[in-house]
Length: 202
Image (cartoon, rainbow, N blue to C red; front, side, top):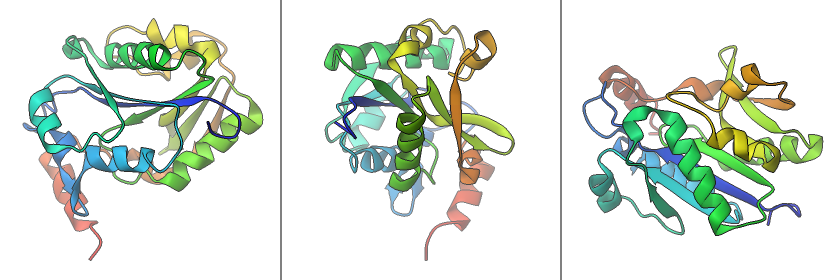
């Protein structure tokens, strides 16, 4: 329970990292895998459900990550795109906690996500009572993002490689934004990994 609201968290980590050639979920930054960072940051907040969606390289990832209190959902259809992971994550979250008010969606490869950043998202969402609150970076919006129960059904209906922000274009979504300039740093290529290593704390 966070501020009298039931909130779940879903970490999307099912992709194959095809451009990188190995599991980006396990790329290390400041002494821990990127996915572990997302799990650890989530653990600093009192979420009512915690779901991790895995797919490609599932066994390898599970063997190297401390899942803590996260329940793993396997997305056998990960090749069909992010929408399948969002759908499975939201569905399992609702099964674990029937009365969820909101679900926060995180990715496994955003190294600069922090407790403070997530708390800011939650605060804006709860204060404004929006259907969604997105992070804004590089003139675009995306995850981390939080969604109210009003749009859970729509999240489960996404198709293909559509991310949650497609809801903005499909309907008149009432949403807020929180600036997160470092949010545009994700890890897709070997060059990204090299850039990340240079940003590690001494």
